[in-house]
Length: 144
Image (cartoon, rainbow, N blue to C red; front, top):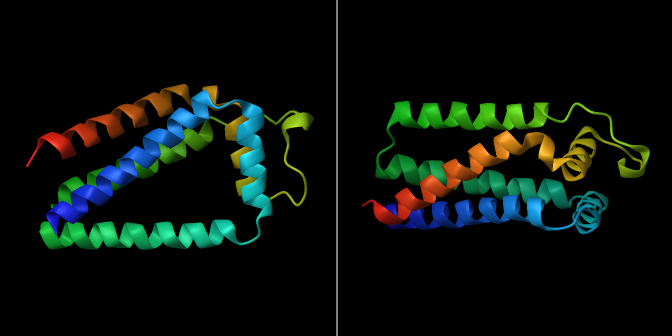
């Protein structure tokens, strides 16, 4: 079970690093077209979020099976939640009219567009999260 957990964690970390790289390397016009397609796709986000929720349940169950250390888990949980909150708080500037989403406008759609419009606002958070992910991937690969 530990090998399965490590593989799933490694793949998820790679996906997160690719997401950060895409945010910084892909031009705004391309990124915003992708975001618009996701938000205009109906129930895609709910479906995708349900899959992610199942993945998180699976990861925690595997962690419990191989020996969950409660202090490490709680610390990681709180750090992850706080980093996400701080990242979201960076986006307090109103969107320029040419960068605002088309109606219907939901809070998550506005946040998605704000992040795509000005990812530089969260540069500290992205660097910290990226560094933590790289360290985590290194630990997965090098530690037994």
